[in-house]
Amino acid sequence: MIQLHRLEGFYWVARTGGYARAARAFPYPITQPAVHQQVKKLETELQTTLFERVGKEQMKLTPAGERLNKFVAPFFEGLPAVLRSLEDAEYGGEIEMSVAALALRSILPAWIKRVHKKYPDVRVNMREAPVPDLGLLRRGEVDMVVDYFGEIPDDCASLQVGTMYPFIVVPKSHPLAGKKNPKLTDWSAETFIAYTPEQAAHDLQLQALSLHGITPPSMHTASAAESILGFIEAGLGYSILPSFDPQGPKSRNIRAFPFDRTGVEYPVHVVWRKDTPESPVLDALLEEAPRP
Image 1 (tube, rainbow, N blue to C red):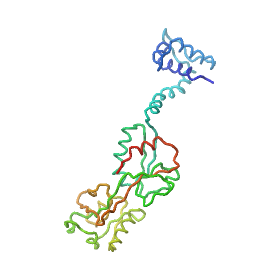
Image 2: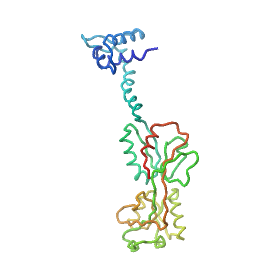
Image 3: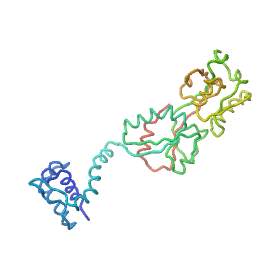
Image 4: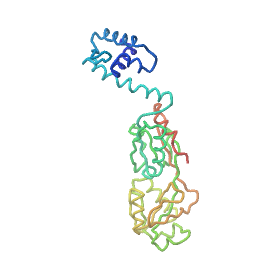
């Protein structure tokens, strides 16, 4: 069994090109003869020559030495960073997130910026999700899901990271847009712009209309809030849209009014499996998560 300190002596001689320089470069005090002995004992164990002398103070790797150095150099070069991460609670690694489109634009940028500032070696892969799919989480395809959930299942842990507020969004050019406090029923004769039927937001929109006794005479659908806002800007209809901004969504040629049912809010959670193995990267994400 090769002793690690002999490989360490070999590495520093290979890196510096000489025994004296290796002794000076060591991360702890050591003499030149001690470094020389480490290398000689390693050569004896391996029954091969690892260096050849090419000058008074200059050593060159043999082909066997080159091969060994390619194996051990990454270990010794990466070791200081690993030790720092353990001592300073720094984390590195990768994590997969499934994120609702609106949260991806409104919450994630500042959140990930905080994570990268504190933990620069953390890599976050985010995929935009039209619907909250906990199947991805349970199958291990993602580590976290960020979305609005009507109910958090028992096998998942969660943390609220935001709150969405509903707004009536109308074209600025419409005569009714000038009203100070319009009601949803004021728009009952207009075309409604909804999310697509497979999205949870679509059902929430229809529930809101139903509570007010509204059946739109016509309806268009789109999968993203930006697309719906584009339809509204073009004067094609109105909608009920969620916004993380308490002042409502902002875009050209629209007006946004608070939904006329007070106290209606939609909490957004980050959700992960309770049986997730201990993960410093997950801990780093949760540590820097927004607190609404």
